[in-house]
Length: 62
Figure 1 (cartoon, rainbow, N blue to C red):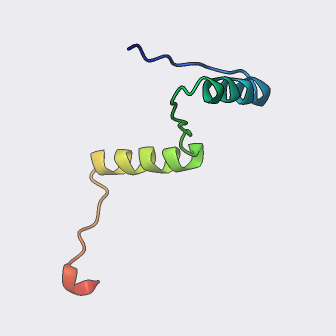
Figure 2: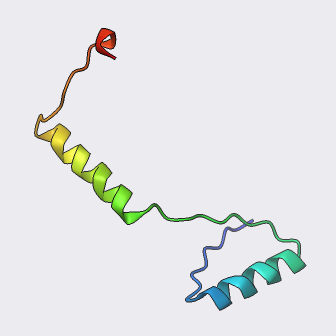
């Protein structure tokens, strides 16, 4: 089978698509995007690692 990726433009379209798929007993998965603020923090952390701005923590110090 094929996998379709749809991009509803608003909540009304999303709700209609979900209802349609449920009525036809079509399985689907909902994915929620990551919080943009969280993504920005991760990206900044990766840049810090590349610049060597890291710390080593001894297990005994935890």
